[in-house]
Length: 146
Image (cartoon, helix red, strand yellow):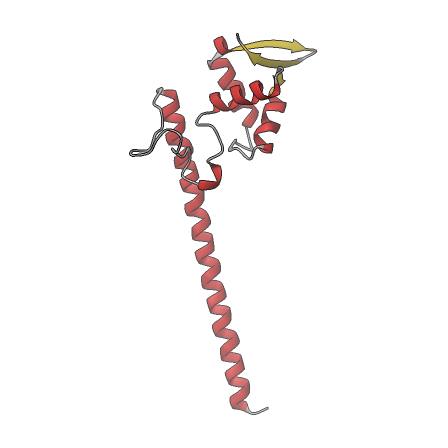
């Protein structure tokens, strides 16, 4: 092989490596932006839910209104309270916090990986009039109040 040919291949590999590194950096930035959007979405929706403000985008009908900034998450009800009520209603029986968390994951709904049980525990405590708590052994089970 000639020196020219070797140098051409070396430059092509170097340029490809530089482009690869640049794309990896852009991908990292994209992931950071996506994570920040998710945090802001959760903060805004939680804040609105705590203040009793219904989240409805302007100019959309209620049936077509998305519940999230991310299209794949539009199958989730608007608040954790509505989510917990729906899960219990669908089950038709009392559920433990662990079962509620499991259902969230099965439905691919957003819930903290670190403290999801505590989030849901807080929901049922703050809305205690809407749930009936019963113990089976040491574990608490929740059902909808009639």
